[in-house]
Length: 358
Image (cartoon, one colour):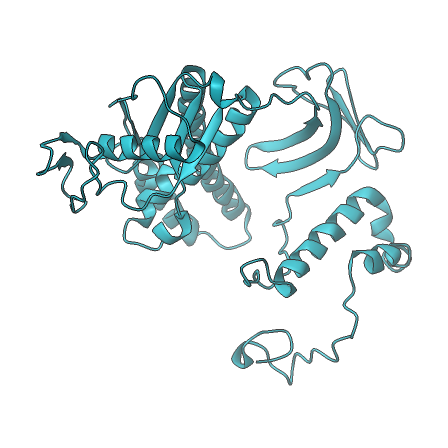
């Protein structure tokens, strides 16, 4: 292994000498202090607002830290790579609408230092009492977007256990997107599966174009728009389900899934197309805003255990009905798992409802 943690056959010590590694690794403070000298050597850097340059240095510093310093489990991140032309599609102004800020949003016009005034479409009004913190400008396939982060100290606290009146367990799957402990199901969309043939045709068309030509760039943007539409359809589907659940229940129990591990199986494409991880993240985010409790439980054995008597009933994925030989309980496989998830969540938080939600 060479000094930059690359395999010997990946880094030529003859044509790509890496030199001596300094004892003290240059961190953010060192590089930020050299920005003035960098602007003298490269005059084009003077056309970039200094706060934006500092934010990019912070990104670089985080990437190096993930690579060099292990996390709590002892694992390290991947080695940072140079961004190719067009790969860095966003930049951030760390202050907005305050003295010494580089970004100002007033009456539908966004004023960016070193760039100018840009009319923007505000998709919803900024709520009163919120403090604007940062402004990130992002380039997407269909245009430029401005993402503004806000802060409000009046975040609702979760309901106390004494106030929880309704609870539900959710089991996500591939046969149905989710099944609740009450027996309700939501059909799975498979957004990517429905578009993959069209996407494959467009990618074959891209492969025939001359790389770097105008037609190549146009076709590449067209493919990026297809991926963007798929992503938006999936996210809209998740948000619609989450809002229905949050409005109806005080406590929602879900499985703490290892999505990365599941994505290494033969069902990887279907699992990633369903977007379970994104769904649970959105559920937790919306629940915090509404003061609803979300409880994650260990998924081990939820499909195999009987929700009525607790007996172990082994079954393969092809068996869609839970039939317990001990207590004669017959349920849909996913509904049985959802009830087990709910029971585990209630047991963890120490809550007893007046009647079981089933």
